[in-house]
Amino acid sequence: MMQAIGDALLLTQRNLRRIPRSPELLLGFTVQPIMFVLLFVYVFGGAIQTPGFTYVDFLIPGILIQMLCFGATLTGVGLADDLQKGLIDRFRSLPMARSAVLAGRTLADTVTNFFQIVVLVVVGIVVGFSFHTSVPEVLAGVVLALLLGLAISWISAIIGLSVMNVEAAQQIGFIWVFPLTFISSAFVPIDTMPPVLEAFASVNPITITVDAVRALWLGAPAGDNVWLSLVWSLGLIAIFAPFAVSRYRRVASA
Amino acid sequence: MRAGRNPTGSSGVRASAGRSGRVGAVSGTAGVPDNVLSVPEELAIDARGLRKAYGKVQALDGVDLAVPAGTVLGLLGPNGAGKTTTVRVLTTLLKPDAGTAHVAGIDVVKDADRVREHIGLAGQYAAVDENLTGVENLELVGRLYHLGRTKARARTKELLERFDLEEAGGRAAKTYSGGMRRRLDLAAALVVSPPVLFLDEPTTGLDPRSRLSVWDLVEGLVDDGTTVLLTTQYLDEVDRLADRIVVIDHGKVIAEGTADELKDQVGGERLVVVLEDDATAARAADVLRGLTNASAAPVVDGSEVAVTLRTRTGVLAEAVRALDGVGIEAGDLSIRRPTLDDVFLGLTGHAAEDPTDDDSQGDRA
Image (cartoon, rainbow over the protein chains, first blue to last red):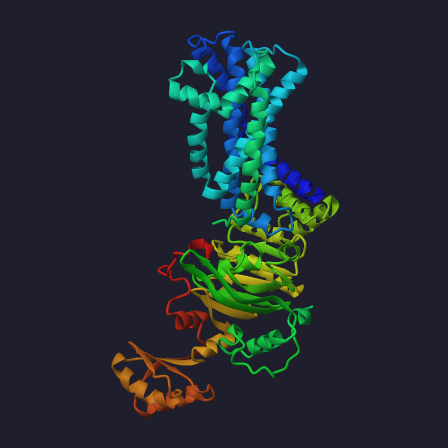
């Protein structure tokens, strides 16, 4: 068990090391959140009515969750890349824990997600965002956001291990995460959507988590959102993590 | 250990049968009487009846391998023959549908984790992390073998020296040339000095100089006692590195022996006569028929006549006299050993690197 954790941490370190060395990744992780915040606040902000909030307060939790979900698709992309380059074969031929490659990857992606949250919140504060609650509530919001990101990471891992191809993993990640994050309360109040979309959006774990983070950060009414978000994220992880590990055991890289 | 696993001692028989160089000797004990006794030899790799199908494609169709410790086995075959699938089974990456395999005396299916502690694998791709430096790549592998930080670091330094990567060690692997990457990959496979090393097409895609340097490194390892299983499409590679060769096609072992034995099998030495005048070729063939063994007719190709020889002794003089006797002028006479290319063509009906070969099993096989 200790060895499994040690192996996973070694691979986490390996995955994190590449970030400062690949300018395109670094750019994606920093410039993208800045750009999204600026575009949404100044382009859409004036046109979208968000009763009870300023648009920037409303937007930051939503854009944060969306960014983490897109970040999580990189889990699958990274695994597909390792498969294509034969690295997974090497790891599988070493006497290391079977879970380490996946745990190391999802953990590394959770760490980068945390840094993205920091960048995003700082940019948000610059354009007028502020927390309306206490530090423990803010931290609880961060934890909920990271857990949802982790859940999406595990789903993305299965995709990466199934398609075994970087471009395909990217495309598929985009195709399912894009609508999932847009048909939610991330950018607009869902009661302006047509009934079908509104019904989908209201049960979407993205909506639930965004609303939970809004409650924890802005003091909005929480309802059941906080514990529902927790149940969604932990439930998704409980279902998809074992599936991903069994997929990893069987996977044969091309 | 081996006796406990295999009380009949048949593996010793198999191994000795294999040494006799008879085709197919290794692919079954059926033809070998049970009472043949020989000292069981330590086999570093011992695979029996390996079968693996991908859908309808039978990638392995009953492969047997017996590799004595400290020797190099060359696994030769065209694309899709089953070479990589064999390596994947032996390195615990793939479970066979049927058959058993032991590496370093350990069952690859039942005790895969322990096998992994005794093997090194350098696959078809230089499996190094491009974003890590040479040092970081090797240290990571060392730590994943649970060597501990200090040992992993010391071993990394040693390997970088041995593989001539000291200067490049601090640079990210993405800046390396193909040959350097392959050397780093090979170094990664050797971090724990594994007793059994698997090299899957180690020089595919390398320039001639890098190939030579990889060959030198492999030879050095073998001198230190490492057992190597090498797959390749290149005949010169097995010719140079392998003690024994197994030729595999369509998932089956179709021949086995040393390079010399395989060459003998396709007909031993040949006398090749190049005539001054094409028109005399048929007559020359008649005259030279006396030198050949009865089964093989002389082969005429333009002005060239080739005959398979019974014996080498005195052949050249005899051939010159015979041709002179009937007034045929020969421009050149030579005795040639068949190449492994001849062997491959003879055994499989297609050349070793024939691109038209069925590649439906792709890189998997």
